[in-house]
Image (cartoon, rainbow, N blue to C red; front, side, top):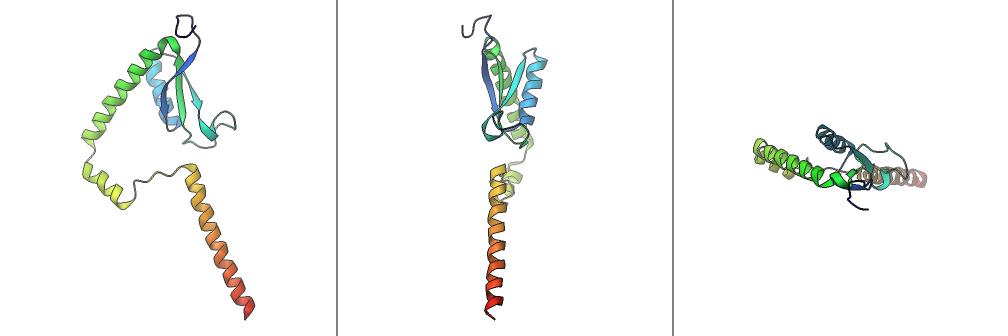
Length: 136
């Protein structure tokens, strides 16, 4: 029963990095009359809880009988946006951001990892100072 006119099977038409992008794609599909849903992926998904991170990856899913139409619409729109972004953005500014290290994008886990390492370093310094003062 996959893909027939009576099919209620959901298929993925887009995989995006956060809920904002998924909502934008859903809005695009809605204007074309294609109903869709978002499904969280990974640790921030529906199994653990919703809303832990605004940067949780999302899948945009539609009925199997409208999947080809939805994929075509999403791909065409994304291609148009990429062309506009490339033509409007200066490559020199982008290269400067990459060279200076400002173009990094850390995930939620990367942020927690950095905070953990800094905390361990501070505790190590405090313990070293305690040992020095105690030996006096």
